[in-house]
Length: 391
Image (cartoon, rainbow, N blue to C red; front, side, top):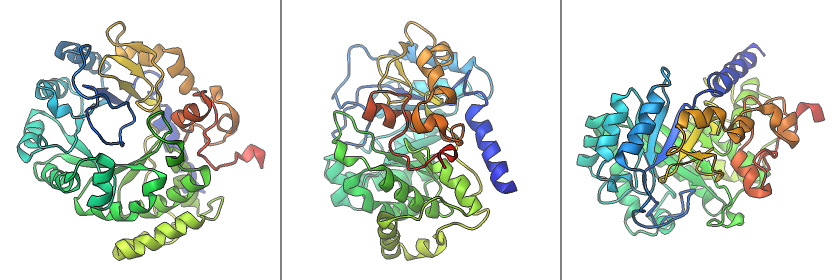
């Protein structure tokens, strides 16, 4: 129990300390998404837009974030293929010079060469991320809509590590490809990624609702990831209840027995990557098996999104605009926008999330709630947990 209390207390501090006044992760989209793939949460509109933030406007955002002081937020440049922005190197260098840790979300295109990645490193980037949507070329290329994308992505991942960049692999968890996860885990380990980020599909007008997992399916996938976590460093996006499993798992008392999807994923792991299955252990994990819980960065709580035209949203997956950096500094919007303040206030959450004893640790996915109910403060429908107050 002491271990649980220590980890829970630490996570609460991570989720609350400073998040009311400052973000610690800022996603800056530099251009309209020109990708044909389906692993982005924003609409796919090819080409440059006439209203994209200029070099000076992006630098003004960076200077504003730098003025917050230490610890300064981490900035990630994203938006289709940021390598198409001719000023990307200038912006990376400006961010690094302003004391901001900076990463780039890179699309696997012919521009993502070892040379271009090495240049980003020399300009001051510390990390890059690539998306891997499937464990094979057939699945990955089908999602991206680009033949050969799978091989070029794996090559680019390896090149990023060789030039000294911290590599993150991002994967969208959706119904049609959920059984690819064991094979992708093996790939993530093989390319020596420092982090595997798993984004749980949020229904949008661009994404069929049928691709999003149910609450029970989400719980089974999280249980599978819980087993993998000691072997593969990972984090979840739009599935913050993973933090709840980490706390409960340390105690060795999960609230439900994982179901059929969990068992099928474990069986697939044994086939795809037998060594990892032996290392992963069995449910529940032993006491102390997971050394830390993830930072509680959610929609507008620790994290914030700036679109290519300067509009500020809680995240790219929660499309509610709270202002524009052309009119108001990002730091002011983050601290004072009524919606962002409500998202960070556990007492403002509705339903089970509002009654949950783990609200400060998890908070629920505000994007999942909004996508299904139209209310960003509603309970997270993808969470299977019943608050202690409900018995």
